[in-house]
Structure formats: C-alpha cells, structure tokens
Amino acid sequence: MAIKKVWIDEGCIACGNCEAVCPEVFYLTDFSNVKEDADFSKYEKGIKEAADDCPVQVIHYE
Image (tube, rainbow, N blue to C red; front, side):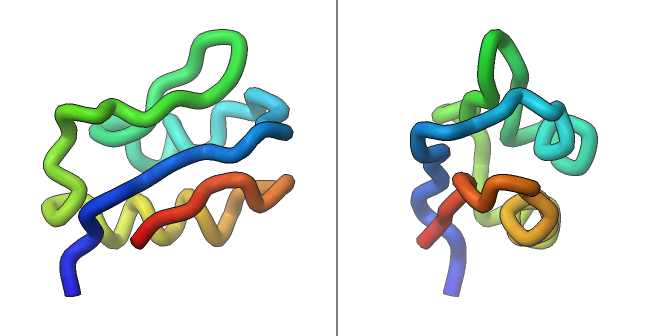
C-alpha cells in the first residue's frame, strides 16, 4: 500500500536526520517540514527510514 500522507508532530528537535535520509520529502527550517508536493509513493523507503530513525519519534505516515 502506497504512502499517501506524511506529517511531523510537535516536538521536533530539528536534528536534520530526516532531511539527510530523504531530502526529496523532508526539509529543515527551525524544525523539520514535509514537502507537500512530493510524490510520497516514490520515496516510501526513505520516509519509513526517517520515521524509524527519528530520535523523538514525531514523523508519521499512512
């Protein structure tokens, strides 16, 4: 099943890991953000890795 939605909850510590793992979907400002125009289905592996590796576990997808 393809990923259709990606979001980041409050509590992001702006470590930059998600952007390093999957810059096609995530970008960093004062905290991490999701590129809403990204094709999530093309980057499922990176999204899942970023969520799994997030030190504060605030990245989610469905």
